[in-house]
Amino acid sequence: MTRELVFYPTWTAGRQGYAERIREVFQQHLSTQNLRLTKQREMIVDYLLSAEQHVTQNDVCQALKPKGVGKVTVFRTLKMLEECHLAERVTSPHGLPKFEIKHERPHHDHLICIDCGSIREVQWPEVERVQEKTCKALHFAPLWHRHEMFGRCQHCQHPPPRN
Image (cartoon, one colour):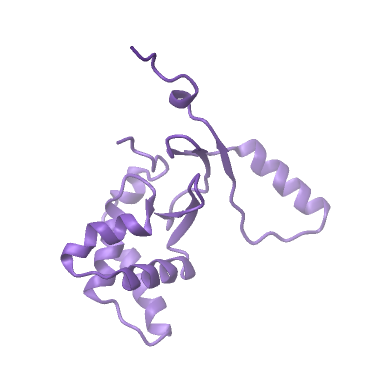
């Protein structure tokens, strides 16, 4: 399996206390809603932190079901992680949402292969500059954006010959 989360640099993921900061932000968000950081929610966060690929809700459910984490808990926790801007949704080629931890990660966009489903993270400084210039010219104050480009990866464009 190819590592997809390339903009998860060691200065972020490997930095001392990163997982604890994620849990702290999440715990603060939960407390504003009179909820607590349960063991199941922690397991979901830990699963996302250890993932080397963008994961679906079903990926999380299958991995944590043996540990007693239910589908509803996974669904609600992923939703809460998005609400507090710790996780971000990426669209798969078949429309299923996939998730990644985004806290303290540099802004990036996604190239999504419609054949194999691989997701490649990319950064486009030139595109960012054009967006900023256009927004300024149109007096538009952007809050966020995301780019997802669908196509075929290098491997799927040129599959190996069949015997």
